[in-house]
Image (cartoon, rainbow, N blue to C red; front, top):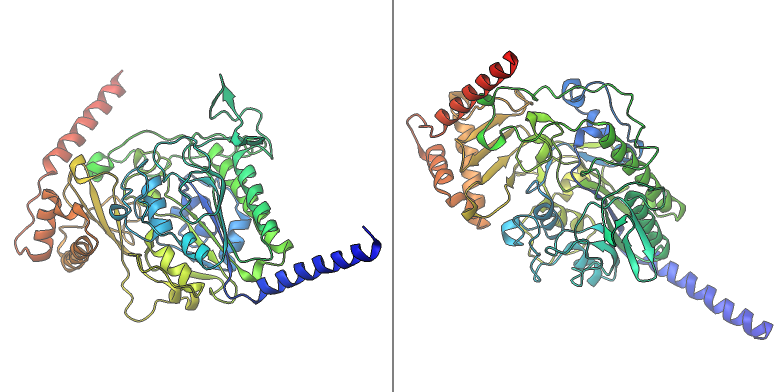
Length: 519
């Protein structure tokens, strides 16, 4: 090529790149980056401990993990103290988050059910608006495939090469045939962490893919969601995080050995306590990689034009109520971290106590982006709450949380939750009303207390209206229906159905404990 031709072509290329960048800067609407974790207890984040009492913040003793990068997002954005998983289990929560619809209408009511083809996600809406979209990490909305890379149904996430359907894999790698699980035995992938490093460990690997996407699309409007499978079990992590917290002293949660008469039938002890050292290591690795992603946004000059959300699909009790993992309406299971950073639009340093759920994400974030929804969402637009740091006039402080499964499964629960109260109806227990202000450990049932009668009536009406509006079959369960009927219209004393079962269970537990002490 002649020099003048080279200069001509180079000039055209430079002009193209400049015009492309100028066009991107001229377009309306911010970028969106969502950092999503799995089975993440909110107390492990410094920004959450900072807004809690010492007793509640230090659930496992004075031992903590510091999370400066997530804390930075909270300090410069908004932190939600009462954000709940619509169902505190992976697939239903994820379906509600991406669609703004309740699980019974996605219809992902438990794990491994494929999301319906008709669902329109926030990514699909943004894709239609010209956004470059992508997803990396665990998806869990396409059935039983495991790991099942790059699901054919993209739901608006255009670049889903690094999306896998299921699994909590610890090591990933690129190959000529595409990404795969690096840890293998007999040709099959496994969860081994042996040999993992800062490139292959899954959290690092997925964060690197997020950075690559940001770099590739920095001159366009983009939306990218990265879903880390940690800190979900198995509780393993690569060096140096695997030993970083071994020397700390940990305590069992206060509720680890409470009497079963103070626990609902749906919340009886199940599993033990796996400790916190490795879990903290996973959280620290996540936070360091959040820093890596923020570094890429800063390097590309995108921090002022990008919404960054940090959240999770559900929590992990980590020994509270003598339980591990999730699936129940206790705070450690159902409440999740949610932090949103959007300079100039979201009030910096805001601490939002109003109650929100996964279904509220889609209408809220799209409203903040000045983008119309498809009109299919069932959640609420809380954009004014984030923009002004206070609830709009007429705001109803309530969200609804439901168990996994179908009506035919037999054991179900359904909850109406506010910033202070949590009313739980179940097919296996009498209703429980928790007062989170007086009883943050969730050990007392105020359902029949005279002072709470009108609160019970009000929340029960809300729950019945929710069931009718959003076609939740749980409100038709015989036990739930009877409890709602008394709560809303009953005048005499409530007639319990499960007190005998609870007291007998507690008595049996005390006898077992005495026998073990004699041995």
